[in-house]
Length: 549
Image 1: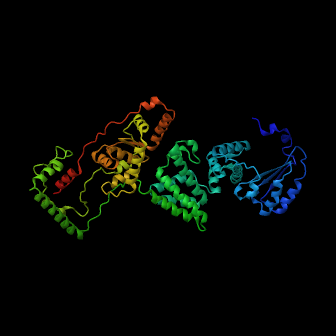
Image 2 (image 1 turned 90 degrees about the vertical axis):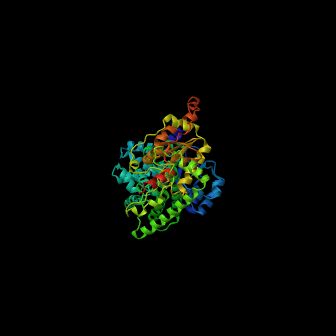
Image 3 (image 1 turned 90 degrees about the horizontal axis):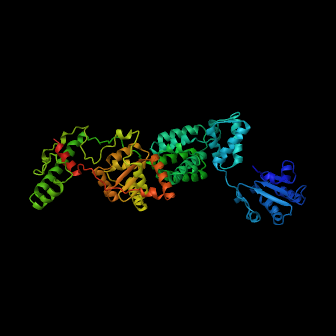
């Protein structure tokens, strides 16, 4: 490979012995006297070649008087003199100096290049190392090869000739991605105790608080960028396996990132214990997550013995009054016709039901509300099956819709439908106070809408239990009526596990990018939604009252 020195034989010959290259450290020679001495030597001609090179490192460290002393020389430099100023803080250099120089901004070295170069150096020097430690060294170097070499020297000395992953973690106070992922997943699940326990272990191990917060931010940043681009090459600290281990969704990642940026700002001005501030924000992040799984059990408020008779009498009185109203209304034939055509002959009532139109009134006076024991809950109407342990413990999920059907949904997806569906879901999970659908809405909190059309919605989640539950009721009448009331019409609900969806979505992105008309034409629209009939709430009410002895 051709090098710069091959084009400059004189430089190659005098690479290590020339006196025409003068380097000065401004951090230790920052006074006026040092600059005046340098200015006096500038008039001397080069001993070899055409130029004398003056390199001033960390030039921003010069005092104001030293900059003023240098200013005249920069305005009218000798023809043989070239100045090279190196700095990491150009904003600290006076504008009068900046206006007289040509500026070159060096790019940071990306992490992949740093890792490759570090590996090459370690192998040439014969230094043993743990492969997993190299990405963390590159992260600490923050794009600087010089800092990376300095870190390698320290880690090598600490490990006595062997750079170990555990030594890098301990000596530089950084946190492994696995521990960060464990903390974030616990916070997302609302388990602050587990998250704080892991954090306290790390704190005892000597982590650096600023490095910890920065690492959390980088994980959320990698996740958000991948969710928008699906490109692994844009990862800064994560791997694809680590990304798949994350449980949270895009909304939580954005909200948590905003909180962490506030934390960084507060840490900058904080004078006290930074770890306490971090703990408070971790708790706040857990609260932001909310409850991400439906309750496994529905608790029923116990009925106090002292209040039991009073409550029974009140309910009996209400039912008695209700019966009188209905009996009085029987005299009005028009009301009877409405009752008969609307409620009593509802096509949702099964034909084998014991309910009879000839005897539409249930004798509520025979209901004994004192029959319920203290430990027995009064029956309630259930619109949806319970989200129980059989769903929560699910280990796998098989989607109803094929890969080709999902591709069709993604290709035909409409931006307006997607926006409306997403806004509706956000409203339901964040603002809706419906008690009838609370358990269903808790499960829907696990879902993310990825595409939508006129009669379908594509939803993804990493929660297999929630996917299995919602798919099992997706065509049930009560669920479809809920969808119609909130989303405008009956919908095919296409559920897919998050990582499987990403694989298929990437294929569709390639199809659309390459404008593959053959594949695009294969996309088929979805047929009309076929709703599975089930008991209406009216039928359930009659069955409930009929069952009470």
